[in-house]
Length: 327
Image (cartoon, rainbow, N blue to C red; front, side, top):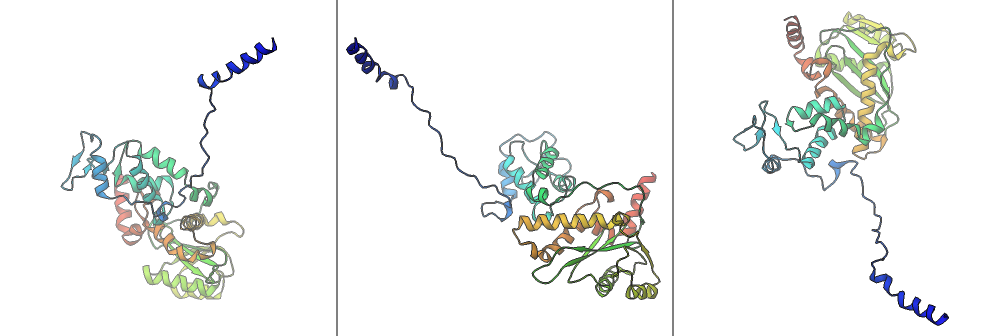
């Protein structure tokens, strides 16, 4: 009996492999590096019209589209059409429209910049999701602004009301510690000056730089810091015949116009330092880039007009908007 059982086990044993009961092969785990700063990667390919042309040839364009002399398909508004399947090209366009000198602006600003040149199915949803998943924006953005019951001084004409404040950025390798932020109320134009200290003399020089570029502004708003409320600024005010309004102490929201841009300067500078892989103490290298981004990006509060445009052709733009509103 024992012999029979042992013989049966020996006979049945080799049958198992023939029944296909082999072990499942498991692939080795490997890490895939996340392209945190795509434009800095050697593998990143900038979009070109030639690539757009090749991509458009893979799908049927909309009936209402037209093909120009350059063989590029555009819609009735002159925007370049991309097929829904061209996700790789769409992604690269989103990178160019949001990263780098685009300034990591909000989803609305990024969408406005991209939609001015391109169109594809689901563009708005794609841009919204892209900006929401930007690691640099997530690490640099703060909370939502808190509404305040009392308002602030405002103007409807450029270079009539000027807000300013010092922003502490931390010690830089080159010695700077603060940024003097000046903002025109009507046009949202911003002037950024990296400084080694927050003093009356630096404020004086910053104001003169502004006046040299745009003319004298005779209405000022700032807090009551000693670098603003002093004999130097008082004498400048008297010499120019200006009015200096001081906000309530320990109430930064009373000068909310400049506080908004201070928050945006911080967010944009942090995002650029993160993307370009620069140490935090090199922030002066990106300050003028931040100024360029803020001044040249279309502003929703200006009906899509960039602050640089509103500041330089100010009265014409404002009068045009007023006439449109009346009609």
